[in-house]
Length: 448
Ligand code: UD1
Ligand code: CA
Image (cartoon, rainbow, N blue to C red; front, side):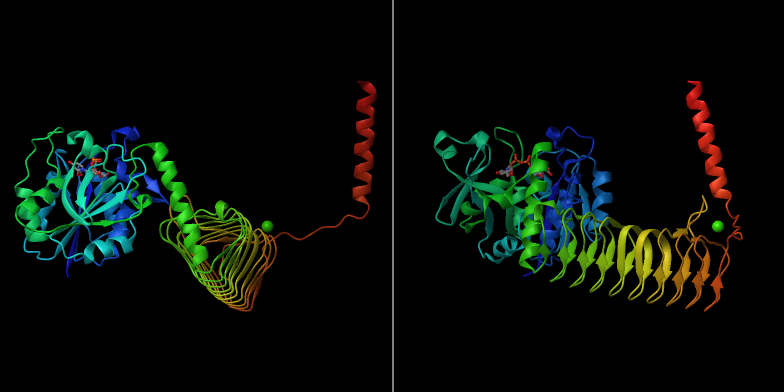
């Protein structure tokens, strides 16, 4: 059955005390709304709609980055979850499948849970959970998995408040029926809001079925405060670490490794302690990342060894068996198979050919203060320590640069390029100089 996703993200999140709309606060280096969208995407929806309100422009930009196909609709005034869904429905005109409503501030719903929800054939299906502390959640009035209605905390009787089966907010409903039910909502309740939750009772009154599908409470965790955001980060990291190990990744000290939402690591990768992932990193099997590496926007191929203390920045593309050692930074550079960059080097905007060795202290001088330029080095080349490569510049296959050279002209294949003044040796002069300096020091100490 075709699926459409509506993600509600119009709220301000007052308790965050922030200029940023709540759904743009980050967990795992990705905005909260990206987590909800990623879970929803697993259902392969035909249409994805995000309802934005507070900070809609910012939300739109962020969503365009993480999910370019998602449509944004505006809810100018936040008149309730039912009203929010009503704003999205015109964009679903003619859609005849199932609609799933998610919240943009609820990042932990698992795709498998959404699949179970989508598989239900009741007219309306609600994702519920047994709450340890039901607090102010909406309560599910149900018999077994048959749902009668949802009552909001504010509107509930003491008896209803005693119910511990709560509404996560995630609801599935046939599109045509949803349009009809939402049109019939009223705001005559304690909050004077249009409650999406009222569609359950309305469906039942029509003689239709409503069902509860339950999940673990941890999946329904919503974020309202900075403290909850920090807790969510911790939970997210725990989940990612567990998943990585489950998939065959070795971690020496898992609690010190920090993942992003889109970190992909194959089996038999070894991660040392204190490895931090920014967005968009993929590591192929058998690679080893030593302690204290910071990786983002990069791809590391099989058998590569990275670090300790290396930094890979966006556009770093490392082929098989590349070695990156300590205090090396790589940005927007393609390193072919077997390239070795052992120590203290910056490679930015560069192409490095197979099995080339980059000596310690090499720098690609890629920026002239206005523009960036590329450095191209061929295969089997040897870049001597402390070579400055003033881009744009090309070093040919099998060429060698002398240590300490500033290379600003292209080097032909198999040539040696040396750029440094001639060395002069003066026999015995050091000994004389030291004697003079020591005598001077002694003289000054006597004076004091
Ligand atoms: C809602 C549910 C409640 C459930 C709880 C779970 C209703 C009426 N109540 O309550 O049963 O237990 O979530 O967390 O649905 N939003 C909009 N526009 C609006 C109102 C809300 O986009 O006009 C978005 C918010 O940004 C948020 C989500 O919808 O992401 C939920 O809104 P919120 O006000 O937090 O709902 P609750 O009152 O907590
Ligand atoms: Ca020099």
